Length: 640
Image 1 (cartoon, rainbow, N blue to C red):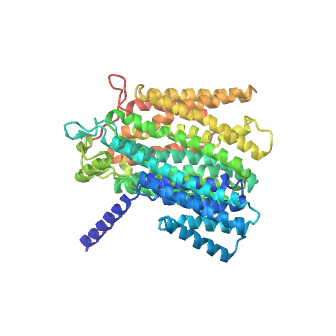
Image 2: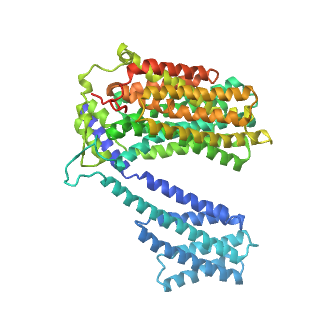
Image 3: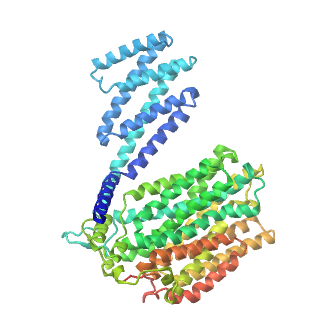
């Protein structure tokens, strides 16, 4: 019976894998982009001339994009697009002639359809001329809804909308073809001229490496983006719906996602060590998506807290897996750099979400729509989920569980058929080792690893989230925003300044990536803590001594620059270095949980925690982290 169930389950998984292999996330995203552009054209470009018919215009433009995008290639799309433009012109021309002579009537409409379709038959384009009839019918119906509209304007707008839709569709198909051509070149990079297999540890970069890096980095982008959105939402909730919201409750709202990240990192990290990375790698964005949609539709504070907690669990689960995938797939010489790049991508989440929030607040001009901001997180979750549908199981996890053939297939899936596993072949079968447990993770041998990877991460997380989440509130309370208007304008202005300050998060990461292979990580993290503490001291001095606001802004910028150049970057790349594969998911998850525990504590004692983090790094780190190589360049631990 067990064999039958296992056989059925294997067939289901094979069918599911085959079905998912037909999903192309890039094509889906391009299609959505094309429809969005067409919709905006109909709603705003042509709507500015005749607002009543803007919905019809959007429909016509969107259908043109859809038809063209479903062509098999760019050349076929050109022909289909030309026929569609010609048909639209004929339909608009016949409709114009009709409206010049007669007002709208059912009999007249049928007569116009008869004449137009006969004309298409004469031109031998009847089978492809349906767009002509559709265009004419839309124009006639618009004239019925708005008799005052000029027939020339009505016809010209419909022709313009269809033409723009075709143009957008053809342009996007051209982009897709160029992308596929570039992707094929990337897939062929690094192939040996003699046809011999290449070693995944020493091979040059390929598209497979970049793909893993991009997909794994999306979790960092989403996590940082959620923190930014929460910082914008809190003052909007207090202004729009809950003026009685106490500081304690604001802290609960801000901390709920962090608590979720802390718990999710531990739970999903441990589960993934036992069950495999891929399932949880896909499950996490699905959890984030569901929670974000729930928060949008149930717009109370309590539902927001629950949703943020669940979103945090999904993000925390991703944190425990992102660096593992990258460190396993990348060539040995680039592992540290690429793990750091993934962490640095969180700055993009800060900047993009702050900029998008600023734009949307300017457009809405009201705090009542605070729950709509969470749809930005839902969009990111959808992108993550689509990108992870066509993904593979961790080769290192498969090898550590004795599934050597599957691990080799996973390596070939990610990097190409001519690649064979490198050092992961030497990893011992997990079944030959004692079963991992939480007791083992907290054993005497792992105590230094836990302290070194966890406590500095807690101090760093306290600074990153304690300041990052409440950055708009801090800017308003310190009087840094230039707005002199109402409270909502203060929020908008503070979000704008947050965007500028977050630029230094990115600059800090760039500086850290430049140094990560040149400076011993213990020293890099120690000095990062000390210098960002100095930035906070400058901020405090500027506020207490009533110095220029630029002094306070400089303190913010120094803090963000050195926090992200050192501790924020290094804490993410240390766990994969110091934990063996058997405990890597749980160890990384536990370290991330320490980081979020520090973030939950608050912003009151940030300078003290940062100094504590520097001390822990200096004294404990030298015992847990592998020593610097002879040339001074740190190396990732290569697991057994």
